[in-house]
Image (cartoon, rainbow, N blue to C red; front, side, top):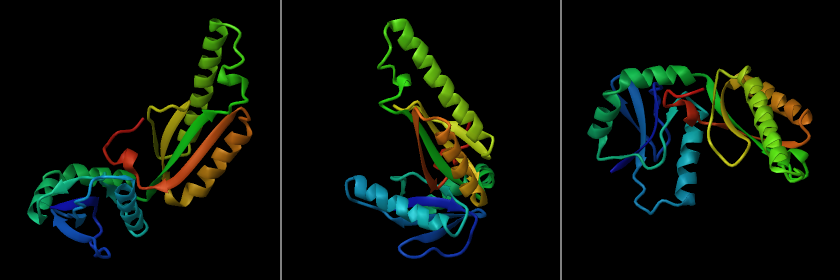
Length: 202
C-alpha cells in the first residue's frame, strides 16, 4: 500500500521518502503507507510533507489516509479524473490558504453574558452574526476565493490568497481586529489549499 499525498503538474522529483507517479499529464506525489494507527503525530507528519511540497510547487493537497494498492492503482485513480483535477489545480495555482476565525472576547457585551432577557440575548446573537459576516465579506474582497465552515466560533473562514498578497491580507485582518475590540480574530497560515482543492467555495 502507498499513501497519496498531493497532486501536481510539476514533474520534478520530490525528496525521499516521497516519490512521483505519472498520471495522464499530472503527477501524484506518494509516500510509503503509514501502517500505524492514525494519531496526532501521523497527521502532523503528513501535513509537514504537504507543506514542504507547497514551498516548491503548486499542488492539490490530499487528506491524510488516502491509501492505494500500488503505482498502477494511483495512475488509474488520478488519471481517470485528470481533466477535473487539472481544472482544480489551475484554480489554486499561485495561491495559498489563510484561515481566519472570529470569536467573542469573554469581556465583550456581545458575548450575551450581559443580556437581561431572552429577547436581549437573541438581539445580541444576531449582532454577533452580522459582525462576523461583515468581516468575512471584507476579507473575501481581497481573496481569490473564500468559504466558511461550521465551528464553535462566530465565523470560521478560509481564504484563497495570492502568494504575493499574504502580507497585505494579514494586515487587513489586523485592521479589522483593531476596529473590533470586542472580538478576537485568529489568523493562521499560509496552508496548503485544502478548502479549495475540491471545487467548493463560497
